[in-house]
Image (cartoon, rainbow, N blue to C red):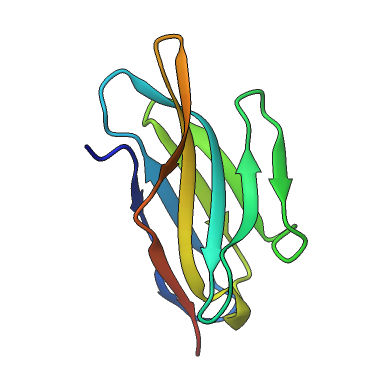
Length: 120
């Protein structure tokens, strides 16, 4: 069973923008919270942004002011908006969702990953 599906990503020139999405396709399930990670070649996976159900957000210093997280409950989707992209942002990006179904909340649902390449 696929719990979350990622979308977006691709190639962009430096200074450009991309928006990643992470959708929960199962009926009756909503996005409760979300973490966004990235893993560059030869490096460890790192946490770069999060949002909590109550509205709290976190951004790692390298993306602060350029990236933003959001959620659209009607589409059951979380987003990572990435602006002013630079070559060092090149990585595979992953979402990790907390999902709510009824009164039950479960965490640690990983997306399949999506490649973001920033180059001229």
